[in-house]
Amino acid sequence: MKKIYSLLLLLCTILLFISCSNGETYSDLKEAERDAINRYISEKGIKVIGEEVFEANNQTTDVNKNEYVYLPKSAVYMQIVRKGCGSQIEENKQVEILCRFSEYNIKADSMLIRNDIAYGAYIKGIYYDLSAYPEKMSVTRVGMSYTASFVADNSVMYAFHGSASVPSGWLVPLSYINIGRPEKAGDEVAKVRLIVPHTQGTPDASSSVYPCFYEITYERDI
Image 1 (tube, rainbow, N blue to C red):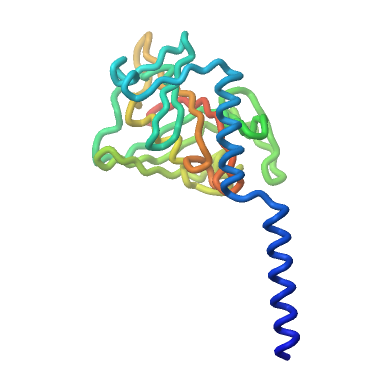
Image 2: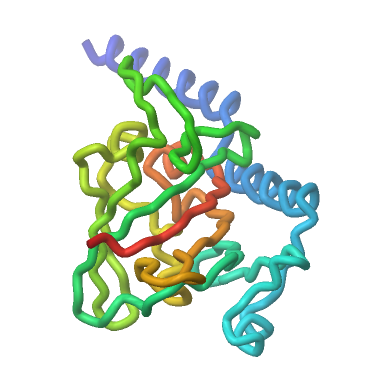
């Protein structure tokens, strides 16, 4: 019995070694992600600015120059297209926010999902007219920290990724934009563009180590 156990243990060790030798390590995947982000920035002609420039410019990015601010705490790159009407989310308050968005896998160079235009997709065998479903998330602010979850009913993100967890990258802009509803001529909802690493992304992005590009609008629900 001891001989059989020893042989099985040796066989498992050999198989594990072969598997590790042939597969990519987490370090390899992170490096590939960094390469994909850098390539995307170069191909799209993105001008990266630091937080100090961003703060000096009253927390704005020049869209005409295709500026994105790099936020080292989250490793997210953010372009504020529109600050939005209304005000920031109040402290110690829970609000519901409607979002229109597109989610693009930078590493695979493919659009994953979107509800910002007339667009349909089969998700788990069910056909969705995605433009009919604005994403709704419930957001709570405590101090300068935000937590959120998707409202599962009619949630495109929940249907596609199987999780009500809001990617942390989606919450990064909330410290810099207003969340309101247009009430008069000239009012516009907030709009941002983000490059989000896997550590701030969806469960799928996190497990497969890929970065995403998002274009998102934020509007306070009634």
